[in-house]
Image (cartoon, rainbow, N blue to C red; front, side):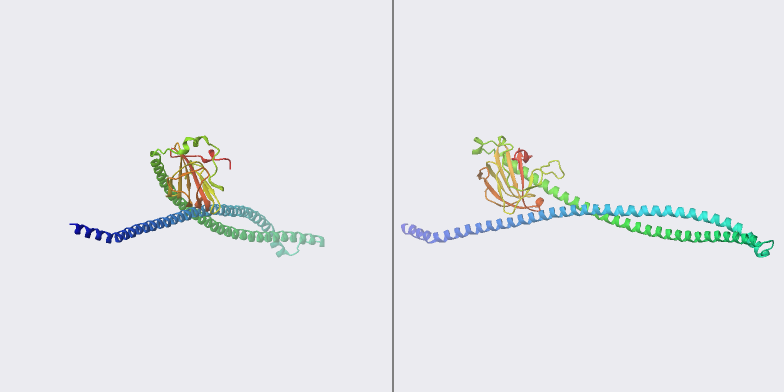
Length: 366
């Protein structure tokens, strides 16, 4: 029996290094798998962030194109109105020319009726009844005046006919120009309508994404609130006593202002910043979320006690971990690509009982 126990002991001692080595290899493989999953998750986050940025850039491009198209339509319609005014003026000139034509025709008909009998009589009798050179001269001058007046009316009628012809040609040209300009206006309006439809589709997609993000965020905050965290800082520092004294999480230009009633709603502040700027906690608290959040990129949420939260979105890197208590002004991370800023920036929210509150009421004057 003793020999059997001794043999088993020796066998165990012989296998112990092997088992330890296998356990170490198993742990190493598990860690490697976790690292691979983490790397894969990070790549997915970056891809989603890039897609969000491209979508925002696309929407901005569509809005700029729509503004350009509206200006082009205004210019084209101004040109079309000018052409149509010229058309109206040409028609009015045509009416005047037609009236002038009728007047010339009446005067010419009267002259011809007066001239024709005199001309026939002169042709038949030549100068019969003319007793003196003075009478001959008077009759000659009278006939010359009538002939000249008739000739002048014929010339006036010819010029009038040419003007009418030119007027009609101008009306045809203006009509063609108006048709072509109207086609250009309608073509531009068709493009504008298409861009409006595209913008609405994109905005619906963004709205759904934001609604999903809001639902997910509310669920996260609800689960955190249900834990009823008690913080060490709550004993001496109450968030609600620091209104208008909180520091800004990062310094930068305002690119999105708090507007919960807008479409789509803006529940926080958007700040454009410099690349690699540090994002800092606005108050003492506990990090309760440090992960990606659909529609917000990488997000850190800090719970400040008494149902107050601060949210820092679109971070490229973080310096804290979930569960960590942080000080006021403590670095939380680094700004990342923020679509509304079309570059580096931060989206920042304050919430009370899961509902957004206006950060400007709580932050110091910029």
